[in-house]
Image (cartoon, rainbow, N blue to C red):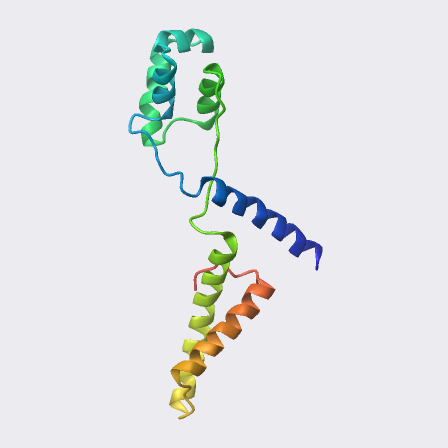
Length: 155
């Protein structure tokens, strides 16, 4: 196995671990995590502001900005730390990485087979459905194995 494939596998394993750990975690409090955790701790906005060394209005602004996604990661982290919490940031795929890659490869293979089968039909050499599906699977496996540089390009 090449170094590139080993590194790619390490990345995939790390992301798949996140999928297993956080995949079902889609709950997001309507008022945002900052205000929700602060209230759960029984901490006032003034108390949090004092711990951060900022004004109460700055805390209020961050709490208002969070649900819309306009608060910075740095602000989220500093506010979490001031509440003796950990700020966790992750991009978690909906499926494991291999499934996403296989699906993309199958889409690309389907496009290739469709283009080829159009030409073959014009020459009266078209494949039946079973043969087409076999070719799609075969080409998709080759695409996954080679992972060409244009893999994620949209044609």
